[in-house]
Image (cartoon, rainbow, N blue to C red; front, side, top):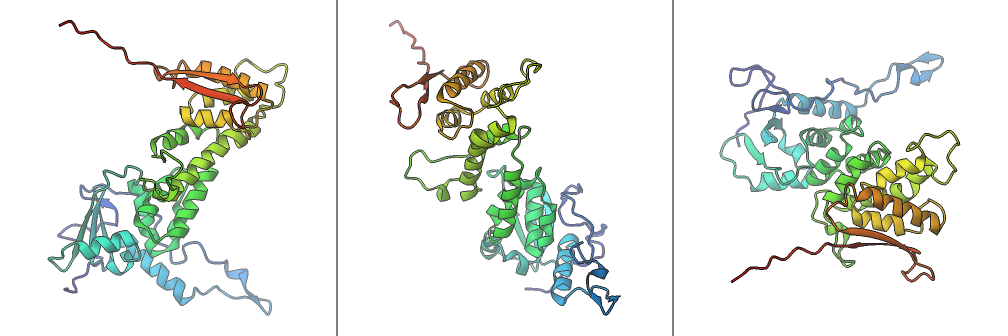
Length: 339
């Protein structure tokens, strides 16, 4: 393999491009400009000696990591070109080999020139966004990339990290950020996500083999959303407390919870309402809540998807739950054809 390496000079007669720049000249996901300390080192006064403060000197390992991350940001001395999401990354094979996914691509992609060129098609992985992939690629070079994870992009980073592999710390941090982002304001978005990911059709399937890029994190996120619906959200909204006398109609915690449950997919709605851990009060209170929620669902998510009903089972005829939700699918109309 030739030793041709990219430098900081012009590239093909054009000004040098930073990594993640699209092939059409559009700048991709931005990352903070390189700083030799990445903002992670202690202040100079952190190590007083005999009454005098000693300036902090980064260790050799830290300097190497900073240098590698700078190489990721600039693409200097790259030997591999990665084309993905309409963007071009100039990267380094020895670093990319940390990812099992990219290592496999490099080992199976024919190399006809000194520069290794890899094309990645992610049309089948819509959760792996341009921003999430850029952060995950940066993590191969330095853990500083984790500081770029926010509630708004955490799920994208988790998807990219799971796809590339070999970055458990990044995935765990992104997952925890996702879990902490659950709120009244974001629950509908998470419900759409949970409804879209595949799930086992029977109890024999393992969550680890779900056909989704998130792997076992898909089931963990599903369980987190369920716990938020049946325990956290009722507690936050204080639905078990009597509403104040001057509360406006539709503004109580119970009203907000009803609007949320009116958007929950049926299987999740059924499991939540029937759950003994649903923190809303007695079985009678849970039955009344389910009945009111179903009335709201008839105007929205359940419209045209069958008739939902709820019963209060005296004597516990439905297993461990006294409240039971069913759905009767509408029969398709049959047309008589005259011969």
